[in-house]
Amino acid sequence: QVQLVESGGGLVQPGGSLRLSCAGAGRTFGTRTMGWFRQAPGKERESVATISWNGGSTDYAVSVKDRFTVSRDNTKNTVYLQMNSLKPEDTAVYYCAAGWGWGKVNYDSWGQGTQVTVSS
Image 1 (tube, rainbow, N blue to C red):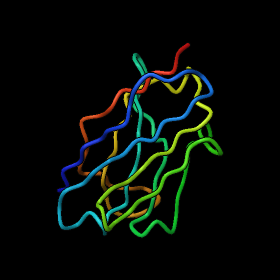
Image 2 (image 1 turned 90 degrees about the vertical axis):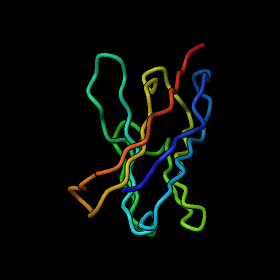
Image 3 (image 1 turned 180 degrees about the vertical axis):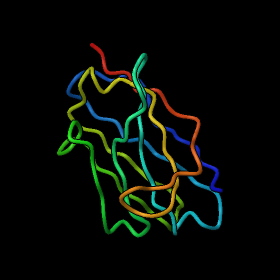
């Protein structure tokens, strides 16, 4: 497994930006598919963005496409989620996860989450 710690959440006004970071510990981090998920109160957890082990492939939920960008720096064992043009409906706890494969990713490691609140 990989130990994951998210940071960068906070309160931001609609239209603003935030960058989330997910720092990983473990020898396999650089070989893992990484995903960002979010869960809002009363809603199911949903996938937001996915990035392949080398950053060569990415995938996004329709609701965030063209607003969010996922990237990674394997030299720093860190994955990022740049969130622009934030909307109130983006409010949620955001989690990163490490998994194997692509398409149907088997996630086996999760961070503790970081709160993002979009409000005026």
